Image 1 (tube, rainbow, N blue to C red):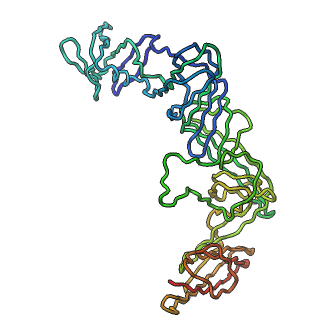
Image 2 (tube, rainbow, N blue to C red; image 1 turned 45 degrees about the horizontal axis):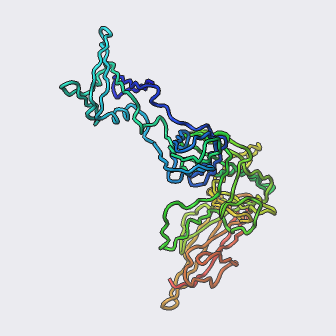
Image 3 (cartoon, rainbow, N blue to C red; image 1 turned 90 degrees about the vertical axis):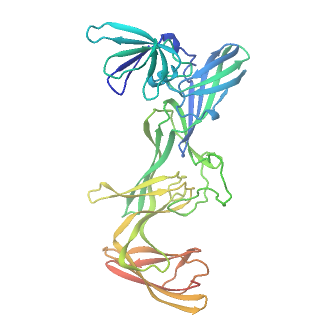
Length: 467
């Protein structure tokens, strides 16, 4: 076998070994492979093969495993077979590694005279490979030149711990000879997926079409041929977790205004939902693949606006309200499915009927029956101003704060704006307001404000607070 590599200059190093030196025991190709892929760049690979084993101890070498395999998670099972030990060799064969492993050994240096083509061979001991190759040839020391003259280095074999590709070696002890099914399972990073949604909103009908896509990415270093593939919507926790600060995990669900309480027919795995692909698929290395998992037409939806303000926030120059789209994933009148975390990209049809992109918004893992309100950008024609009209101390620990909010609409149609006042901590309460509000949480309240076409609406409120 000839392994050819160009050095940093023009010198050519050709490493020669005998062909038999690379012979390894390689099990038959997988008869069946299954891949379970999680959201956090992690996958469980289950590889089933039919092997004809001899009785007693023998070594199996699996070359076609993930280059990023977590070897401590590897498990091999077969009837009448016990595992003695396993090793993952990821020291890969290369010209530099061959020279590094040859330190202290004798190699053959072959040089060719460019003038007459004469070939000379010398035995050399490799002393070091630190920023260059240092050789002992006879009674003198020489640095292998990088001067453009062709040279070859001949090795008698490939070192035992160098592999042409990452290899999982498993020493097994078989109770008897014969063919049997062997299952190899392991966890690996390098395989991940995410959900992407395309939403087309029909303003006239108040309907939305939503298509959900699974985007698979494989950078694990190996391809998975005709694999049964299951996607898990959820993020298993990895490693030790310190909950001394009361942290119960990441429960952020952007865009969800109300969590659903409906149960569907989708299969579960613990507290996660499963999205199996309908057919076997090949997940090639360094490939991104998309598969549709949701296609809903004509679900009810609405378009509106939202303005959110901090406590006593004064906005002297009009600020754009956010453009938001609201819909549900309930079974009755919604998308009718659990939605894995991802990105929703919104489109509306222009005057020619062609869909045009208007913005995108992230969503978290969303149980069925939830209400979603997703912002796609800032409104051009709908603005908000706010001012602190007065603030006075009523007592040592009480203040009265009067706010005025002005909402304007330059559109030729009326709009509805969700006006949200944040920062209402402690015992802050509204003692007077121009229209009823709804307390959304301990620190926020919301007014639903109708703003006429080409007009304005003012909202006033007086707050009693301790600060």
